[in-house]
Length: 119
Image (cartoon, rainbow, N blue to C red; front, side, top):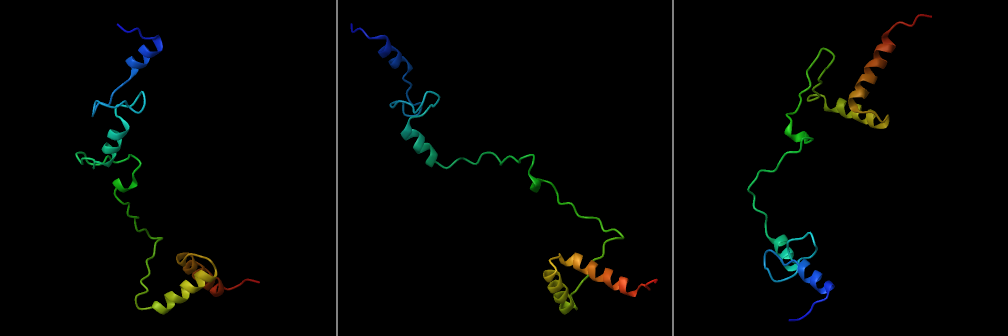
């Protein structure tokens, strides 16, 4: 009978073989597969048995909120007045404002000019 040193005995007892092929040593202590089996497994397509789980922070899972129309909201249809809309968009771009705020600015200045000035 051959005598083994303690170091050889420990290395033989801790040598873990691949669970899939059973021939090669595993990659690391915590791993179950050897390098070649791990590579083969990564190339296999994953079975689609479960539907993807939705993240609790996923905004697409919630229905879209539709803003309620109130007395302070006005929707303007520029369908027949495209030229006016283009002018408002041009002014908004020059003054670096969104179009809706540009419309409010124009109305505000209009009403300011129509109000009698008290001297």
